[in-house]
Length: 180
Image 1 (cartoon, rainbow, N blue to C red):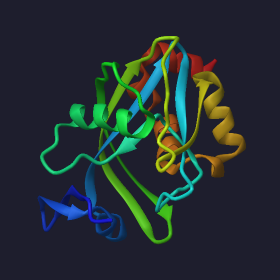
Image 2: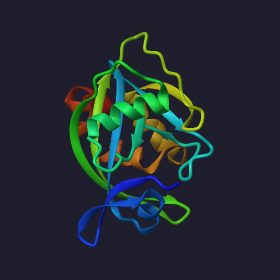
Image 3: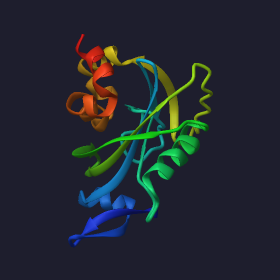
Image 4: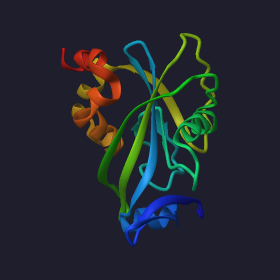
C-alpha cells in the first residue's frame, strides 16, 4: 500500500504514504460521499480485505484524494471505482474534521470535504468486491437507531457524521427526519 495522500507533516501539507498517515494519526485530507434517493441513503459494507474497519457499514463512499487531486474529481472517481456509479453530480456540502481510532493501532484524523448526490430510482450499483461487500438503502430516520442498537456494525466516521454533523451533511429537511 504505497498510495500517497495529502497530510500535514511538520506543519505543512505534504504527500505521505496512506498507511503511515494512519499509523501516526496525521491530519490528512479526505472525501466522503452520501448518495441519497429522497430520504434514503446508500450505505456500503466495506470489503473483508480492507486494511481497517473491514466488514463495517459506512456512508456511500469515503476516500483520500491523490496528491493535487480536486475533491470533486476524487468523489466522482471513487463512486465509479468502488460502486460502479456514474452520471451523478455530487455537490459539496461542508468540510468536517474528526479524529477516530479505527483499530489495529490506526487513527483517522481527517479534514473531510463532504459531498451529496441525488440518485435516480433506477440507479445501477455495481460494487467492486475488493472495496465493497454489500450495499443497501436505509431511511435516514432509521439509521441513528440502527447505530445505537449495533454500533460495532458501523464505521467510527459514519457514527460521528450522523451523531454530530447530520444537519451539515444532509440539510435541515432530512435531519428533521432523524429527529422524528
